[in-house]
Image (cartoon, rainbow, N blue to C red; front, side):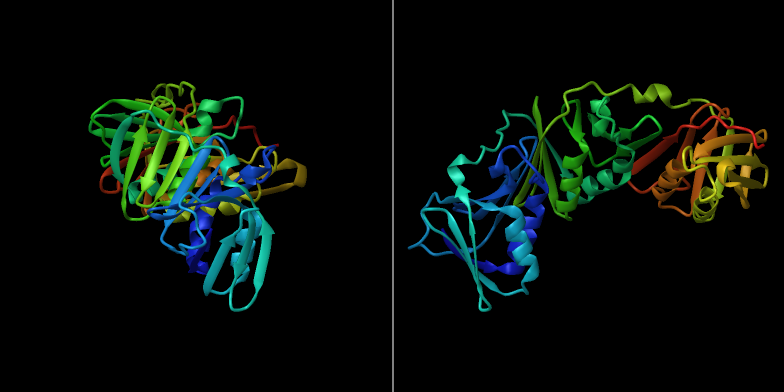
Length: 376
């Protein structure tokens, strides 16, 4: 295989595909990226057997040195580290029959040993499936607004992904770890069939990085889901677990409403949170008609902090506790100047929404309270 390409363009494509390369694997060939000569150009593929990424880029092949079906697996880390260390310039790539890989530039020659591409695992094939037309912007938005709430608990595998629930003209992306929940309803996510599937958070993160402004075709079958963006494709095995009934934990009747400036509250939570217990991160909010008081203490370090923020509050005065880290992440996820909290009681979840919803979507977040201890 012989071709010439821009080092910067090749590195850009390898960076996208390299997201699926495992750091360590019992199969050394998985730590490589597969190079293939196709009619469309150079096809780059990588997989960890759960998530696969394929991208095709135009290059100039040398016809007298490249077989029509040439395939070579190239060590991903060494290749990408080499390209990162190079300036942007033309690069000649060649691989011989023994899979010895050589990179040539005006500045030097770099050699490494590849592997037989025929030994690289085949990419999964989807059997039929339902296609959903969306945009890369929508996919990126879904990842950005739900990813932070995905669970890291391997004992609850269903919650380690983003749950897509598409019923006709209404599509939702949901994530929860039991402490926080995000429900994002997207008008641009529609399907002729009712679909429900869970995509691993890593796969969604990779799709979000690749997504641009172009259209995206989502294909869903019984086992896999793929996201196709022009010349790039992310394919992942679905999490075959039943997602919990998240609607059941959303309080329906909330007679207490707090409207507060997001930046003011976020800054106060960050400052006061520094004085909370390093174990519990417990922070308390006292709600009054014209203000919210945020306080925390760390008994072990004999420290405490207290701040007042102007706000509008409707309902009986109330004290409620939250984990400062979780509350910070929820507030960081709001784009508007104001944020609205709705409460029913100190021991039930708080519902959080932006002061104004973005066009084409409805976002609702939930944050679970913590049991307050009393100051000594």
